[in-house]
Image (cartoon, rainbow, N blue to C red; front, side, top):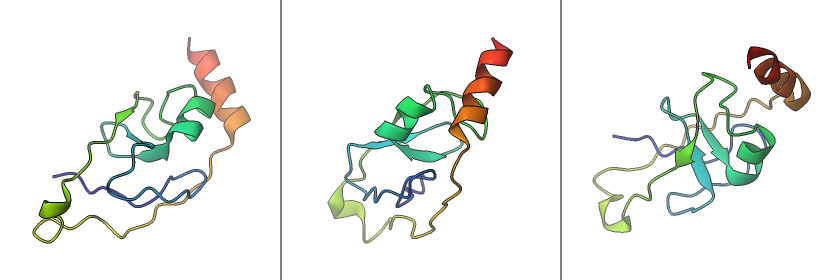
Length: 88
């Protein structure tokens, strides 16, 4: 089951369970759509791509609560871009 993390790892934007702005990679690294654009759709943690995070139905929140764990580790965007361009 997905954690549904509450915020963007880079900018710390609030991304509630029903946000259509949340994007995740296969390891559930969570970023907002704006930051995914800055990252050129490449996860800075694993190198994978991003997909829209599914929205957990509100009637399932009591049985399957979303994560309250905030992961905030801003990315050096310039370094990230240089790294992914070097790998291509």
